[in-house]
Image 1 (cartoon, rainbow, N blue to C red):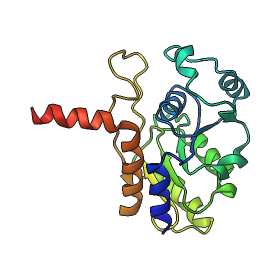
Image 2: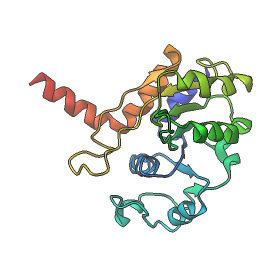
Image 3: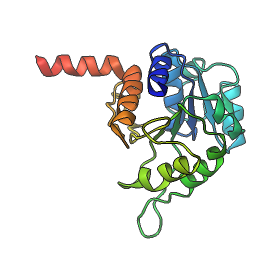
Length: 212
């Protein structure tokens, strides 16, 4: 069963995590999964960001040089064809507000255009860019279905809004709780399981505090 195979990869930390968009959200998230033992690969159209990651140089103020050492060699690429090598795809591209105060989804759309030809069965996409309700159904699901995949059966789609707070020294990617929604129950199951592997220590800690 395709879902079970992906869950098993996540359980064994063999699922390759691909991060699209290596800014203040994507880079710390990639470091976080690398610290947890997952193989990671970052994607960006900015050659300078990719170059810095390959040299393990931080280009974001609150990301230390020491934390960059958690990343494996060759951890970033400009080549979106390599999306076929990953199991979990996390989209963290910018969605700046337009003049009408609405999220500009052009980066999300271009990301999907870049990766759709290279999608494969058994992958999960998590949209984590800040946007309005319905974006996942409008911008992520249609190109996945057009590629011949059945969402919730052989491909999984979730939405989990980013929770980065760069100026807050008290909380970080490890300690900020996540919210996850799935297109189907199977999608939600995969999404929750994957994110629990990242944040399980926080969830356990939060539960203990609630019980006191």
